[in-house]
Structures are given as structure tokens and as C-alpha cells.
Image: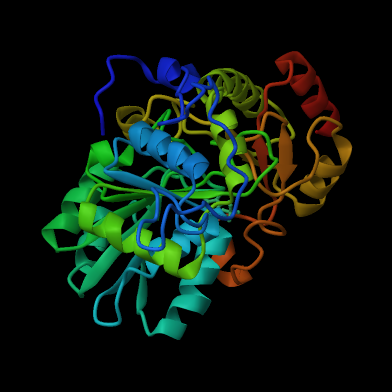
Length: 380
Ligand SMILES: *Cc1c(COP(=O)(O)O)cnc(C)c1O
């Protein structure tokens, strides 16, 4: 990583000319090409085939590595391709210890795909450090967690988890999709690997799917890059270009989204039709202090319970500015019912242990916050 004297917002918005671009374009050009001509059969240039490497993707990956403070970042076709790439670094003799509160797709991969490779998976409540420590006594390659968790926004202590993992010879991998490197940089807190669904806040416009893995160890970076090429999972040039474009406004979008999310959380907390609000920025949130220690913002997700599934279903039909969709982090506000949507692939008896069926998740966009509050009132 090269040191920059500038704040993140400056680095995001700044001109990052493509290396070696002969015309010094101020925006990274889109190299929408599969192949690159070689001077001779024995002399491939810096690029030969876009699955193996593409200048637009390379510019994106170096920007992402700089943002995370990583040795290297790799871009994939979706968040799940990135999650899969990380989890498959575990081996049958050293498995994965997973935090019990994970994105539905990660749960599905851990329970239905890793067993096909003979890789054992164990689960732990990662808010309970003693439980994590006990679970790490079995051979573990990777401790895999999210914080804040989705959709209940529980907070995990990343520095303590990193120390525990390292004491037992395991790596800590953190799914950072909710916070983005603009608000939380797990590698600086001791984690070894960060994965993102860049479909969410990193791209921010709901117009692509992409994933990111950022790592500190050069050897792990090399292994992941080898597999990214061997398996053909890399992000396509056009999506790389769109993601580069989205990143430029990340700090600006987050400032606005978090300002509004806070107002929404406070509004919901004072509403008679709402039983409970989950937002790490509220002082009453159980993980508030840990979160403030390790993150510089509270994110755009607010979830709440109405106390009745019927009432929550009615809410999702009663708003105009919160279209019912999976995903989050876009400039457009959205609502979802995780138990029926993004987390439906987790068996009900497990799911309801971590959140109730009536939980509504809101993703706050950049609309006028007065309009959003009026619309929420209408829905409730
Ligand atoms: C959406 C999401 C993923 C999966 O990303 P895709 O881009 O949908 O493949 C992984 N982790 C978290 C926390 C997510 O929200």
C-alpha cells in the first residue's frame, strides 16, 4: 500500500489516472476487451486475457486495496463469489468457525457447499468471547464473522476476535459489506481478510453485482489470485468500471445516508406502532460502545420489530419510497422482510433464534429525509 497524506473522501473523489494510459484520461478507461495482442508468442504484454487480468479491473483492485490498507484486493463477479473464495481456503483438517449471525447466502454456502469439499464448519456466538475461545480449541483455519450483523445489527469486538483467532493459529475473516472501508477497516483492527458484497454500499447504485476480497498476507493474496484466474470468477471490465465510478461518491453518499438513518432510527424508536429498533448508532444499542470504538459511522441499515408479522407485511405494502427489495446500500431507500427474503434460506428454527419473523429492515438512501419520515408514518 502506498501512503497517502489525504483523507478518505479526498482519495475517493480524486483523479486516479490509469497507469500507463497514453492519453492521461482523468477517469479510468473501460477496457472492454477479452484479449490483448502480444508482440511475439514468447512475450506476452502486461495483459493477455481479461479473465487473467484487465487494466480496468486492476485499477479497481488497487483502489480497493488502498482503501482497506491491504496488501492486495481482488474483485469478483458477486459478493458470494468473494465469500466462497475466502471460505474455500480452509482445509478438511482445519475447518471454519463461523459466527452464528451471518448473511443468508453465506449460511447456505457454509452448510451446503463447504461439506462437498469435506471442510468442517462449526458455529459460535461471536458476541461471546469465551464461547469463541472454547470453539477455537479445535483446529480452525478461519474464523468468519460479520459486524454489525445483518439484519439484527449485533456488534462484535473485532480486535478481541483477531487476538483470539491468532492465539489459536487461525485467521480472522470479516464480511465488511455493511460498513465499507469508509467506516470500518478490519485489517487495521487485526483481521487478516476482509470480504465485501460490493453490490451494496461500495457501488451504491443498485446497478451491478460484485464482490471484493482484501488481504494482508502476500502469500494468501497469491493463492487467491491463482484461483481467481483458474476458476474464472473475476469481475468483468464493465462492472469494474461501474464500481470505480460508484466508489468516487462513497463518502458523500454515506454521510447523507447515515444522517438520515439516524433520524429514521430515532423516529421509529419514538413510534407507538414499533416495538423495538435496532441501530448501532442509538446509545441504548447493546453494542454501541464497541461499535463506536472500531467504526467511524453507523451505516444505512435500520431494522425494527412491529410485534406482528401481519403488521410488518402491511407496512411493506403501505409505503411509496421504500420498494420491497433484497439488498441494501443504494442511493434509493428500500425495505425488506429478511425472514421471507434475504435470509429465507436459513431454516426457520435457526433463523427465529436470531431474529423474529416480523423484523423489517430498512436501507436508507439519499432522498429528502422529511419525505422518508412522512412515508414511514404512512406505512406504520
Ligand atoms: C449481499 C451480501 C452478500 C452476498 O453478496 P452478493 O453480491 O449478493 O453475492 C454477502 N454478505 C453480506 C453481508 C451481504 O449483505
